[in-house]
Length: 120
Image (cartoon, rainbow, N blue to C red; front, side):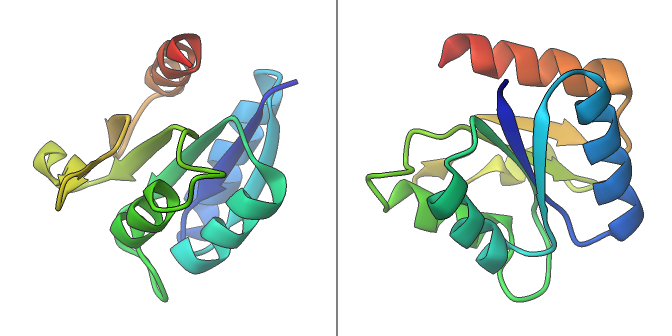
């Protein structure tokens, strides 16, 4: 069973996304910020990370940069979830593997996840 880490500070969105992914057959780990998300990534090595861009403590960009700079987890794909512009999916040479605009549908979520997991 593939594991997905959902890093989202909005409790309702985090829980709803986790529930949808569990119904689709994924094992799900959740986190409320990028700092905790990085620690869980190091400990659990999920198959994919879904991450909000703007969060307390550390946002998605910080998680992406720290992940890419850590050889043991750098190959784990990361998809940004954000209500902002898709142009924010890369920064300082670090690029996310995907982007989903909020609000997204269940179908969009699963399609994005399946496409990225198929690549890796």
